[in-house]
Structures are given as structure tokens and as C-alpha cells.
Length: 530
Image (tube, rainbow, N blue to C red; front, side, top):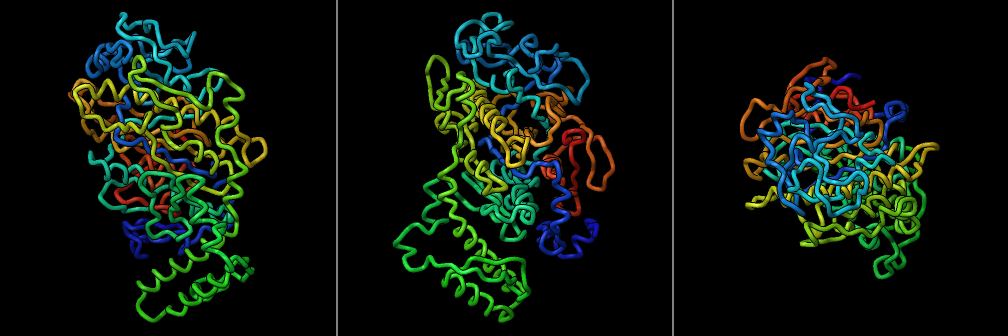
């Protein structure tokens, strides 16, 4: 059944997007068809604080660089750049005056192509004002070409310059103090349930704001798992003091809250049986709202029982996070350190985010969606308002992107669950932040024009889509881009946060108005998903 927006509202869904998947159904045959050849996992990386995207990527013309970007300066803590420093990551000639809005990945090059690890020596075309920095090279490394697996969506209107509201927009597509649609992580998790019923943790949050399922089925609700140690007390029956005498499980026929027979069986302990029976006994005692809450509680009990029965602690104990990259390439050691300036501030690559644990979860095939907060070294976020905020931010951002680039390379070297595929083929990596920041010549304040990176899966890489309106002054907003609207029509207009969320979901083969709905109108970026 094709669901129009009117039909959704008539069904009582409205902005909250009630449980499309449970009420209208994505049956197993459709789930198999819609995801054929598409990614089946999502890794969402939130870079905390709002980013100066334009300091690492450059969609600007020669005139735009002169208008918005400071001249190169900073020495060992370089920031600003000249037009002559901007290069395509694939090292083809960069035409800064091509009209766009679709360009190859390009940006100011701070590393030495001939000696990428160099931390001394003047950067070419900086007039001797800047010294080489190696960070960010992982994206451009010609051995791995991660830029060719990635698309950058630029200049989207986040609809807010408030931190939490911007984070919500990054998660679900709609800015606000509360979620008005489920997070994309939850939508993807729910969509994959019937195809991958053995994934014990469909929607995992390692850190950051939880990607709520809102009113989607409870199976898509976020589970907070911060590291291996956090699994033992909450998702395992190993603790003797809590589980003594209660571990025995029997396989019982799966039954829905309303008494209908489900498919397969559920591994239940005596405590589980009592909890489920007590919950169903209260059905119909109060009102429909109470029954809906009880149903979610009932489904949560069943889901928790399945998860504990899978012994995920033991499974995770057999999986390594980073393992292939360091063995293959000595320039990317597992335990690496990054520094600002001449060791003014240093920190480990491991302090950027718990990428190692994210890799373990993805490699274990226990999960569909994984979300985590990321920063620069030593938990340095990007909410920079100080007088030297742009300079410090720029250098930390390059380090943060270096970490993400190394993560992508590791995923590209990891065999996937499907023969002939890699983990990066099977996973869409979505990198976002709260919003953009005012352009460097006007400081480092909040700015609603944001960007996002989509990598892996079937993304058509080596493209930056969008840009900034160079006729504006101060901190410009985005320019029109080609989009496919929710009704299937094509349009060229300024992008917004809903369009980024829709493109994430489109990458999984999900259909607008059928598998998901976003308030405020939306379309997906044309030509980004293969």
C-alpha cells in the first residue's frame, strides 16, 4: 500500500511517525528486495560542537576564498589558506571556478604528498607562513582512496543554530527541542529486523545523544553499550549474584502482546515468563494509551531475553576492532599520537572516540545501527568561541578527520559477512555535527549552514554536492542542489537537514512515504547513491 502524507496523518501518525513498520509492515520478501545490493549496517558519527567544514573542504571559487578565508598563517598551527593551496584529493587539476554544484573532493593541502608524515617544512604556496601537518591525509592516501568512497553534502540549512536542536536535526532530519521523527538509526534498525533477526542489538549507542525510535517498534529502541565492560552487568547472565538459579531457559512459541501467534520461538527464563504473563494480564484494564505502553514493555522483555540468550559478551570477546590496517601499513599504527603545534597539545588517536569498540560491534554482526560521539584528541570538542578559536578548531578538525579516515580504511580491509564484500561495502558511515560555524573572517560562532559525509555502501564517491552562496556577505548559506522530492519529482533548491536524513535512508533502499516520513517536506540528493 502506497502511503501519502495525508494517509499517514489519517492513520494517526502525524509528525510523530507512528510505527510504520509494525502497522503497515515491511514483510520479509520486501525487506530482502529493498536492501538487495545496499548497505545493511549504519555507523553514525557525531562530531561534537559544530564544524568549520570549509577549513578542510573547499567548494569556494578563487574569489570566494579571498572573500571568506583568511590568508595562510599560523606556522606550526596553520590556518587559513590561499587559492593556490587548494587541490583535488585525487590530484587531478582543480578548477576553482567551475560552476558546481557538484565537484570532486578538494581542500587546502597541509600535508607533504612526498612525505605524508612530515611535521616540518613550509607548505607549498603558503608563502612560508605555514608548516606541514600530516593529519587528514588518510582520506587522500592514493593507496586506499577513501575520498572515492565518500560524498560530502554541503551547505544544508540545519534549521537552527542551537546545539541540542542541531543534534536532533542531524539524527532525525528535523530541528527541535524534541524528536518529531524517529532517528535514522532507528528507522534503519527497524527496517532490517526481519532480514536479520539474529542481530541481538539492532540500535546501539556507544556515546552521545540516543537515537530515539520514538513510536517505532521497541526492537528499534537504542541500547546504550559504552564498551565491553558495560555488556556484562546489563546484557549478560554471567554475574552470579544476580543470576544464580535463574539462568535456565526454555524455548517458548513467540506470541504477540494481543495474543496472536508470532513466528519462531523465544528463549525464556522463569522470570521472563512471569514478567510477560503479568504484562499481558493488564491488557484492556485501562485505556488504549496504557495498552500501547504495556505492549512496548512486553516487546522489550522479549527482546532482552533474546539478547541475553545470545551470549553477546562471549561473541564480542572473539572479535578485534582495529586489526588489518596496522598489519598492512606501518604508517598507520594502532596506537598513534597527534599533536597541535610543536607538541603544544598531544593526545592518542584512541581518545578521539571509541572507534575500536564500534568496529567490534559492526564486525560481530550483532548490530544494525551504531552511534557514537567523536571529538579531537583528549576529548576536545569543536564548540570554539575564543579569539583563537578558528585556528585551534582547524587543527583539531584535521586530527578528527584523520581518525575517521583511518577507521574507513580499516573497514575497507575487513572482509564482510557476504562473500566478496568488505565491511565498508556493507556499512553506510554517516558523519555529521550540530551545525556549521560562521566563516573564519567573522569568528567561530554558530551557523545553520551545515554539511555531512556519507561513505561506504553504494555511495557515489569523490564528489562534493552543494556549496555556499558567494554573493552573500559574512557567513553564507548554501546554494541550490538537484534533489528527488518525496513524491518522486525532481527539483533544484537549497538543501536542508531533512534532505540529508532522507538521503541516508535512501541509501538503504527505503522509500519516502512508504518506509519513513519526515515532517516539513524532504527529498534525497540526486546522484549520491548508486
